[in-house]
Length: 313
Image 1 (tube, rainbow, N blue to C red):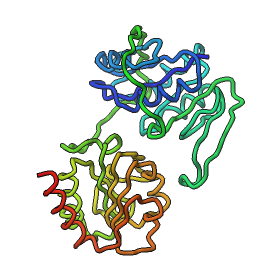
Image 2 (image 1 turned 60 degrees about the horizontal axis):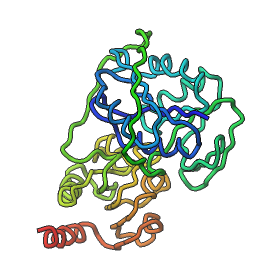
Image 3 (image 1 turned 135 degrees about the vertical axis):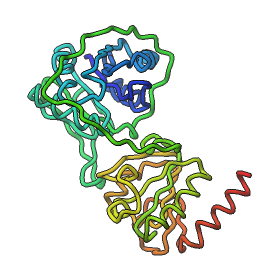
Image 4 (image 1 turned 120 degrees about the horizontal axis):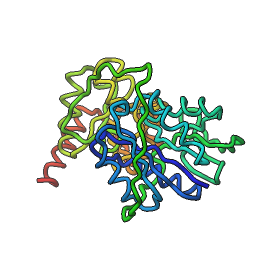
């Protein structure tokens, strides 16, 4: 068995999701290689080589890979598939974009959102917004799968894998036009250790900012939001946590004014400690919360901030 993990990175640095997907690959068994494809991504390739359990790092560097578009990535990965039994991607925006194209090229069925590995071709994934767990066994000759990073512990460091340079593909029909990236001094939402999220109950964008952001600042947390809050315009799209947003599993998740629809719970129920503040005692969020406070957030959040200031100085 040999498994190829497609690295998640921003060209400058490797994302923690990569080492978590390596942990999933290790459960499949056999040799684990990592592909770092990007532009001027030498530092990311060097970081991948230090992940424990990695046999070899394949480093493809070129202008066509700078934004990791699906077309050039598929042109790079599909020929490499001949040497591997499985190809794993993180179930993030990039992985969900590239993996289906690779699976189609190889004429295999993609396995999506893997949360556990039971064997070389047997996987566990969730369905119905996380309300049911499905065990699937693939009969395809090769596995193409996306892995939910929050379901696996990161592989340790201490590896010393060789880095092998491979050729980048030429230009295809798709070209990168532009992007608008939200900049923030807060931790990245998907990998944050602490998250403070607000829901539609906050009533307005101004109230969301006034209530959620100071609490997040005190905790050194990322800011999240329910889909209802995003759809109402209280928060930008990149704050959305849930089935159609980002999946997070921080050490602490604070939900303010979020009822807890199943789509939202699918994106945060694996958090280590969940704190919910909602004045509706029947809100579904309390079913998954470790600590639930039935109260109006307008009184509860300022009181919480006051106590935090005493503790944190």
